[in-house]
Length: 338
Image (cartoon, rainbow, N blue to C red; front, side, top):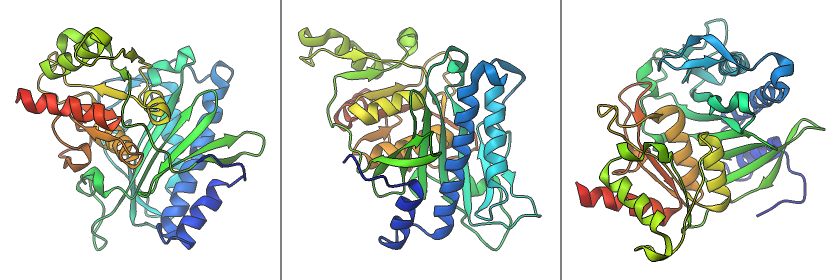
């Protein structure tokens, strides 16, 4: 459903709270704060070289990846925006070794914020779409302090999730567990405007997204699926497929959410001990929540991503998500090979 009447993010959230009773006031305010932080990040991204934010910083994150200047800036923006509001108990970021507990000088809330401050940062310097991914969890125990264990909840317990894609338009995609809504940033007024509600992706697709250069390293079920897609009309699928790969999860998922497709970031044999490369808490869980709310599926090739119980803050996972029937096919191929 596309909207002509201008409904702001604030109005949308207030209506969800007041008319439908779907979210508490604290969660509504938290999402508004995250959305404001995303606007600040969008401004920094948009300035590019003019703001001296391009290039790498002389540091690495917990995963051993070289950080971009904008990775660090975006992480700091999200911390500064959220720690004083009274809605959060703690935050966890892909760019931080451990959790960031809200300082004692500020009131502590009942929610936990998990985020990837700038996904696809390898694309920053070449002006390709990048984005911010976030997830909101409820703190389980209120009578004690907060610890890493509080964050180790399966994705099905998320209170909200979303991402912001910084592209030709700046778009915020949000789910509160009752469907998916898209908001576009009006740069003239500085407000998020609802542009699509009840987002649903097609169940079938002729488009897949995967890094083909890693083909020789994949497990047989993934190779089988991609080989069948590449065979086109002459193959067992009886139809031609297109391939798209931006190397920015936010951009790839946003395309799939908009017009259908399947995104695969599978296990490969170069690092056999690791179940995958994407982070369960910061990337896979929020994206899986959004995709499922839009009628799609998200698995690790064997089980539903939202059912996986994390064992560590920076746990990695294989990801297959997107149009329902294609994700199910890949998952079935893994089951047959087991």
